[in-house]
Length: 434
Image 1 (cartoon, helix red, strand yellow):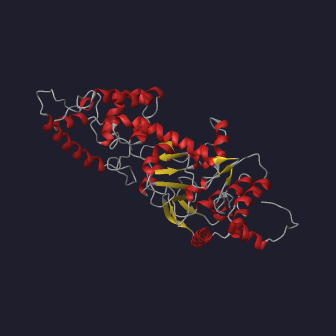
Image 2 (cartoon, rainbow, N blue to C red):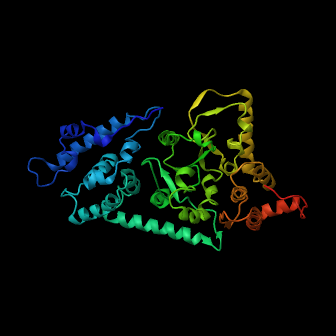
């Protein structure tokens, strides 16, 4: 499946149509008060007529095999998102922001005060200096663009970043995470096609329980496949998530620093907090998109599906990722499942949902024991949210399984402790294993 590339700000007929509606060109679209050849208010009216027409044009241009409107939902194409800001320059970045967001800001226009002109440049200059992609600028500024005074955008971004940093510092205390309600460190902005810090989207998430079905932030759950089968197209995943109504998504391979990548020393420190709190993204009523055959792969379950160690139902981390509002994503094929496999598939989903709903401690522990993981420590960490632990032990790869399990037992809910004590009132003499 190929994605149609649309470049709203680079259409060759763009300026011609703009000018035909009595407006100035894109590089200086707002007429100034001292232009004798143009009445300001008439030009403004014509520009709004133009933007209304453009809204309808781009609302009818879709990605192939999707129903995502590039204009109406303010979803930008991957090509536009990947444009380096240094190549565009300040005027180019501002032009594309105006086109995408339907505004008329122009540093050279006299309708903006001189101090606003300076501030607008100061906001965009750091992105140019770092040569960020346009998608980064768009993700950072779109939530402030309409209802914030331009002079306040820079302060608002800095304030939310500092608040987020302080929150993550505050929740860590004596190798414990003091609350389970910790949002992810990074999220995938699907509109801008960029991975951004949570602080960037925090303002938009206010008023939502970010782990609820009403929040625009979705979790993505997927089976881990062999490396040779990991050639998935993130553009297609982005389209599928947009189609189910997501605006932001959390995907482990994008939003969680991976082993062996850049900044390994940062990964070890971040994982202390990030790994144990993954479960917060999959709170029982959170919206989750599930790829049961691997990330981006269509749902097609052969007869031996449940026998594979790569099966979604057999992986340790996916136990906490099933919710009441899980949605199957991925293109489906004709005859997606053999009849016998389909029955088992539906029974397993119903069983897991019931297990999450009842929160039976022994049943959850036994289910985790029968699952597969890279390390036994992952199985223990994957039970933290399921057993309602608070505070949550940090993730320490050097910790032994026995020590990790003992720490977890000390902090799980009283109900879980009582349930385990009821079934196991005294120590056994069998071999400990996961």
